[in-house]
Length: 92
Image (cartoon, rainbow, N blue to C red; front, side, top):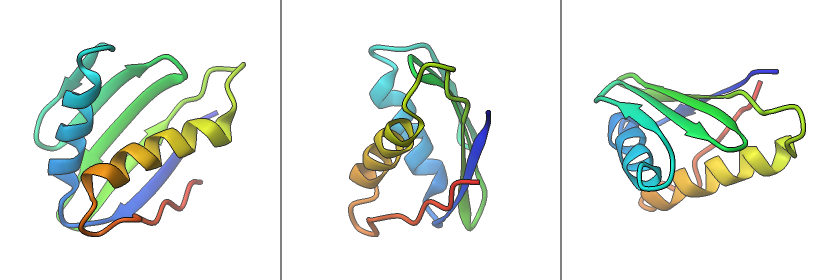
């Protein structure tokens, strides 16, 4: 299963880099200004920043609480986006 949310923001690049740096102390990460990857224990997280949105894709492991996974990602991004939080996540 793969779930993706298109999060409207003009700060997507900043947020994806902050999240990757935040979790790089615990997990394998790979990121640049427009793309990010986190080898998260619940499943991989991939992010892509554009001018007006941050695309967040999660691939939950089979035994994972998917709602909890979505919430962990959203909560962490909202911390970095405190000026515009809560960000709208339309998971599909």
